[in-house]
Length: 518
Image 1 (cartoon, rainbow, N blue to C red):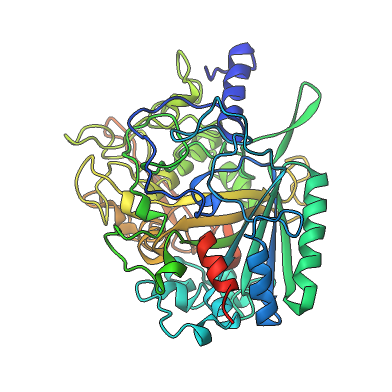
Image 2 (image 1 turned 90 degrees about the horizontal axis):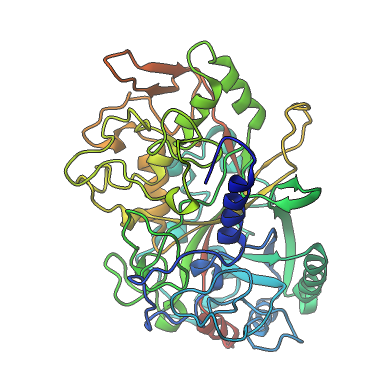
């Protein structure tokens, strides 16, 4: 149980959360069985599974010699680990993540990887690999955002001002950002070994040129005298509690009120309802799309902002109202007054709640959790919103899967102005960048009209990740018993986009198809 002290109950609960995120915990979920139509050996692993590895390195590559580049991609799905590190698929390996409904937990682990490897290719990357020249039928007809690219569509998702592509790092958005290779590792030694192998392969025959590299790592804290990974972000909140469940997917999560998402929302499939498969089919089938982002977080500005409003509201309560959860992960929907609800909450309960039920009951006015809070915007659950108008309905067609880790050291409040950049690195995975990533950022995060019948201030945006103008920014916290709402104004953006790329995540067959082009 999550209690107000660090006693054994809380320690056990934290351990359970650790196991669920980095280990093998979890609970059985009989109604989310495996779906044979999901070809796990074809799909890149991080689309369907969280690796629970504490460190990651992202390489941004520019194509040098196209034929050599295509050949190297083929080597990464050849099955020959001695020749080249291999792309990780969604097949079961029983290490690092829990066995899911379709896995055999009693079986001997198929392998014990100390790394996981994945790649994404931008539209300029497909062109640079000379795929368009060799495949006359190449078409991404339903995926105009991918073809246009992140820089071209930045304004649609609020990447303006300091987040404008003109300020992006490492050549992102400049046309040479062709391939992103992402390496997760269990240990620093493994990261060094496989990074060295990859970098040697990149330059063989002039295949690729590395133009940018960045590392992420789980934030550490000392427990029992030992440093251990946590699940926190730099703003201090526990992360990774609300997980997107895919019907028939290989992982299982604690039950909640939300229905599982259809697989075609994250894996390109013939049964999709709102897009046509990219052509040729062997290139598109079982692929996916992802938005890679590097996001700087202004921790000092955020903490100063909380303190600057202490005459209106307790700073920690304000932090909870902004996010929708207390910093320890307890949701306002279940405990609006404090982060230590009487009797405690198990880890399985932390995501098992609703904002508005089918009969209209719940918290429709946001007295417990403000309608404009970050969590309620990015995943409104049963709240009637733009794109989902029925109380208790599903917003699944706009859901995202986020795979990311922090970068930069743990924030030290005793040395706030250390000049060190901190933030998040990772991917937002979906099958339709327009209908999922861009819809959420454009309509739910940066628009006041998302909440249907609940009228927010017309200048209202997501208080945590919205693109704010201090002259106009406002966050309204409703109060009960007829009391006037608390209005928080004059705050700036607390996040800044430092890099972005719209990536295609090809299947194993698609990578082999690319490699086989002459």
